[in-house]
Length: 67
Image (cartoon, rainbow, N blue to C red; front, side):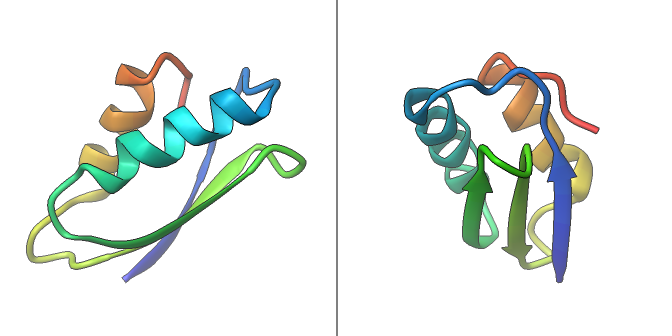
């Protein structure tokens, strides 16, 4: 499954990398691309192992509001 998560507050490459690494640690994530310009993360994941709420929780834990 593919999903896009809107992320507020990212302002630098370090922010982007932190969010990307947090999402990658969620079991079931296949790939993730985080864009500062679009303020979003595009995530492909196995919906049998992860849910959208798990991905959003990882973003929040990294310190950014997720929609």
